[in-house]
Length: 462
Image 1 (cartoon, rainbow, N blue to C red):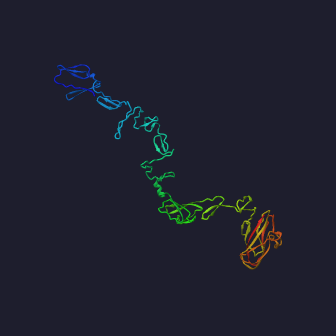
Image 2: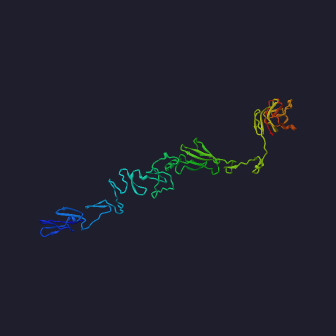
Image 3: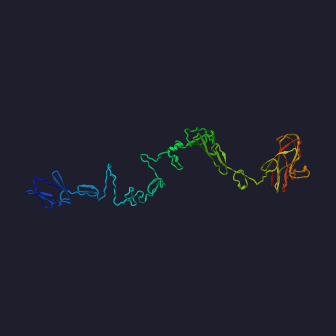
């Protein structure tokens, strides 16, 4: 510390003498009342003199004697005071251990070399070179960029939300922390929302919406919730087509299923009924349905019995036929037509006359193969005569009998069928090359009582 000299006055002092520079400020007393002094100005660069009680204390800094202290690396001494503040001459760390820290109150802190910003919105950030810098809040040295893998930014603020660029795992650690909603936000859920567990259990019930497979005798599940569903299955005995006993629709009607032909789901509605949801199972082209030994419908290939040429025969038992032609009766009386067959109803047998059967197409021939007369009344003693043909003669009794000659029938009963035999001469083959050549059934001899019959006519056109 500083050098100190004490002067204690005893008796009368009449004279003092400066003896020049030296180690001590006060030297001694020499004969009589002469006091000897060293030069105070020569003892140091800073001198302080003050009195305490009956002593005068003199402090000098930098004197030649005593201990000298040096204050550096951020410390400054002014007279007897040492203060924090000065040039740092080495790397310096301030540590408060685990208990204390450095706190800045309302005063400002300045950093050397930082750009000058004095506004209240001044911000400190790390620039692109990794150094501290200052700027008005929001400048940020060009802003924040490059937020990736689920993060996005607007240049200043980083937000959760963005495209994941890699597999990302959220780890709850030993405390099992996890992401969760702060409230019920299900009102804003869309098709891509992540639902929470309360929403799932509230809409589907614990364990999910599927309640398992059911059959005809399965009891309706309890504690049902809206949109829960079951899937019908075949019974243990292999029945695929049945009506449920315990699952009814909105009309309280038991629901029927055919599992061979449809894929079925039953979905519960919280109004207290079930809705059948299904789609028909498609059938493969060229196949048809057939039941197997367990009553399950299976697809089987359709095999044509008849093919149009010998080269198309693929399976044992298939047949092929030469092309044939078919005619239809469409314009004579009240008749029903089928391919190669003509059926005419209610022909009057009580009146002599003609009924047109069909017209031979232009350029074609016709050949009768069968003609059946079906009686519609009883006539135990009555008689009538009919014929079929297309020949015309001035004598009516000789007309329209070249295909089937006169056939006399008597003593008929309702429902009896009479086969009219074709003519036995060459005229049974009729040429129809002339346009408008009509074939008629002629009543040659009428019945005495009211009789009628149906005619079933079969033939070929070639």
